[in-house]
Image 1 (cartoon, rainbow, N blue to C red):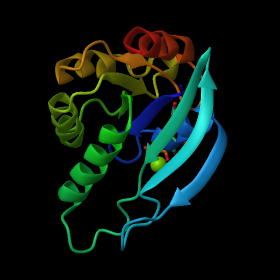
Image 2 (image 1 turned 60 degrees about the vertical axis):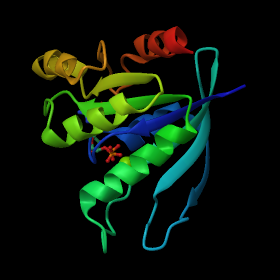
Image 3 (image 1 turned 90 degrees about the horizontal axis):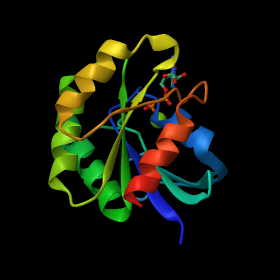
Image 4 (image 1 turned 45 degrees about the vertical axis):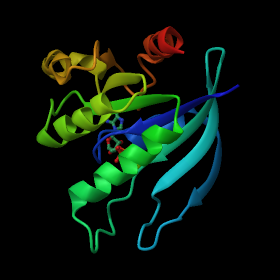
Length: 163
Ligand code: GDP
Ligand code: MG
């Protein structure tokens, strides 16, 4: 059985870059809610010997009648409920932001394993952010660079440990 992995987090942390790195096959974008573009993107991929079913969350471009935070919560809760493991991505260069804390709170309340990935960690520029990330209460942050493909073995180890 493939591991269903939902990639969640605030915009611009590198979720889609990570999705693209992990995804061998990208499936159709599903616009299944009115007014929502690219709400979720699906793909299949592989990391080590793990078969992955990937869900990329995105798209707060069309915020119309709901507040951004309500949309963000709804989308995240839905993706997390559908997955086996949630991969929560933060930007280690930016450090932990108020939006990250909202995501962390949502994730702590759901009954799913969470892996905290501190992205953009190449070149040691994210060290302060990685330390900060411990404060989210989601365990050990895994430093990665989705863009440069760094930290993928540690990401594998974290996934294999919960799966
Ligand atoms: P998303 O909104 O969370 O899906 O983020 P994107 O994947 O669209 O990436 C947002 C920006 O961060 C883009 O400019 C990416 O090139 C950049 N980015 C993604 N991963 C990395 C990384 O590992 N290191 C650095 N330095 N930039 C990254
Ligand atoms: Mg994206």
